Figure 1 (cartoon, protein in one colour):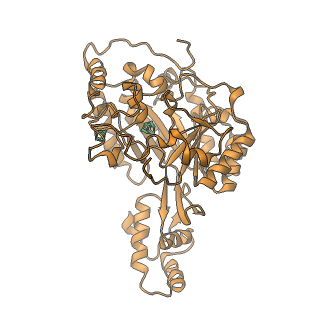
Figure 2 (spheres, chains in turn cyan, brown):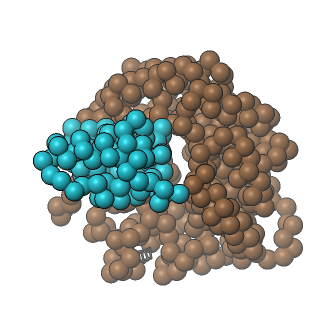
Length: 91
Length: 366
Ligand code: SF4
Ligand code: SF4
């Protein structure tokens, strides 16, 4: 089912998951019922855009603009597949 | 003392009360339950949450006893949400009404974990010591209706292990996204009832194979977790990322523990939030520093390669079974005290299996 994630998918952060900037550690955390995941800047930026409305191609465009960098789509798809396998985002 | 890195904690286990309508035979609360009169007030819990957040806590498990017995629960949830702390309610479901579930959800509750004792009413209520099953079923409906992310958990032991498949089906039917199947850990009331609760090796293996089969069948639909029965393992469970590394517990009266079971270690002095700031307790107290790092370890742990994996196992179990919390967890096959565990296993696994053990319900006087 994860392989069905492509540039048209509109991933959405799972209900049970929350993104929280942590001022103590100066990074964004993904909070889940039984765990806390430290996110790097890019991972946090992608997850913030997983609102169920934006398709991956739009997320990509937005981040390519923000980072002034091209060719990010395959990495983003890979990342979303990964986190969806963990149940942290829904399609 | 050698310099040991102390990192900020991520999670707080807030035991709001020891009061509970259930009387589970494996309750993890201490044998001496704290009375309502000693409980921290609402404003003190607010203070604890504020200090915890400043210290680095981003997740609070609201537990008990039954946290719903506190009428101020939704205000505590609301405060956690305001502070940016993820809140997880660990409940038996008793006392949850439709209105209360809505209120908790509106207050910003992040997740609910509902316990279940067994897959059928008779067995379940027998374990809980009261008629709870139907109320839990309603609680599950209210949780789903309120749109709260929802897990369930079942503590497994001899009287319900054979039902594992049915328990999984039931939790799925009740709407849980996730189910924790936790084999009993032997502290508190469970330690008292140990021989009646411990399954035989064959019963355990059978249940585990059902779990594995269902886990792969339900892949992507429901998350299943299995928490090992450590007595049957060769190596101990890792102590939560290490003593005083990730999490702290505040008990109903404000005592601060490195872990939920630590009160059993009667040789350690514990601090209280009424007297000390949480950050001081986390960083400087004897109880938190005692088993940090590796210097405190004795042999065989001290020179063992696995110490970075399991931290020598569980301090509470070492204390309960050997009388010294600094000893190797006796579950470890290299512990000189392993025979203490093997003797219990031998007793449980020797026929006649139907030997009757007397159960001690939480709340019974001994
Ligand atoms: S000897 Fe100690 S560190 Fe080594 S495996 Fe056993 S408990 Fe773990
Ligand atoms: S000491 Fe034992 S009960 Fe306490 S956290 Fe470690 S493993 Fe768990």
